[in-house]
Length: 324
Image (cartoon, rainbow, N blue to C red; front, side, top):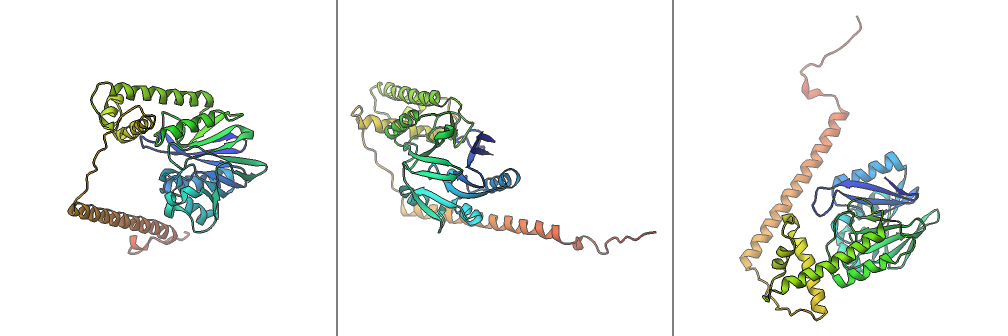
């Protein structure tokens, strides 16, 4: 999907309630293109990229950046290096978060404020936008007015927030960008009214803070989960943990502002038996997944073998043909 003269969107369908409609990998430039984000460690992302490049782009991936370390945005960095010899650029602070997803070679440090040349005069500027995650970056193609936000701003609904104070500053920073025409989010459709959407996000967070304060006016000390249940009565159950995380982000900000009193909880410590059971279950789960991967690879090789060889095992004596 063409976004601007230098930008295309590869939209991969997604059924997760956290990822509205689809997850998007963006291609910037021509010939040796740059990818923004790389998708999950799932074959559909890699096939989508390879298929799009082969059928539409007639191009290769020369560079890759990520908006943040979460697995649905960064899991194919090593594959991009192995498959295309792509140069990978990441924040220094993101390296320990990315771990073994990083390639062993072709890795470069990226700092907020750096510009990345893509060729043909196309340049992306990296902008620090922490809040959703501590390492969140957005990328701005100012000449074409295109802003890539990852999960800082979504194409539909609102995002989860880790540090609310940082997040509000990040939104304000993006709002002040010149020539901002379209936001390219990590999930969901393009945003054609970028300033209005940022203002909506800012108002939403202000409103949510008021709701948290109202919930606490009952006089009783409440848990974040109890507040979440009041604020999100009809939420999809699969989103409750994320909603609770957003409530806790608001509570941390209110504590920092000196507006609430916090009674520290006591984290439950698992017994040695419970820890051993969890480790055993995890080991068994990983073994099943390893075996499933082996079966998939065996099926793939079997399919190729059947395509390349005669169906000898289907016949005792195969039909033969000659002219009359």
